[in-house]
Length: 134
Image (cartoon, rainbow, N blue to C red):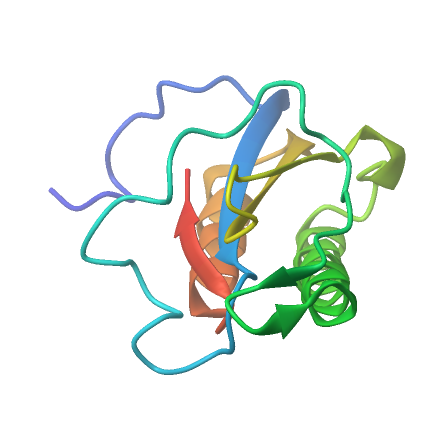
């Protein structure tokens, strides 16, 4: 029996949260863009939902960090909207890690099928800046 033959434990349609983490605190490279060998630089700060400027982090300016955060967010939103056109961007939740290395985005979509979720997860995982999708 393969996964498409299994009964779904989810009743569709339903609201379905998806958490997407990306590395934004250093320049992209083939090693840094896929799951790191160690966990992120610590837990996400529950109160830190803003993109506060950081003067310099590891030789990277605050402007470059902000640009990477925006590029990651826009890339994720483009993918999410492709698979869930009714997604409300205003409901997007963003959290930056304590050391400004990782950005976590939570998108709660209206899931209508397992195929929709599978395609969305696959495209998000294929994005070069995405480290993890939960």
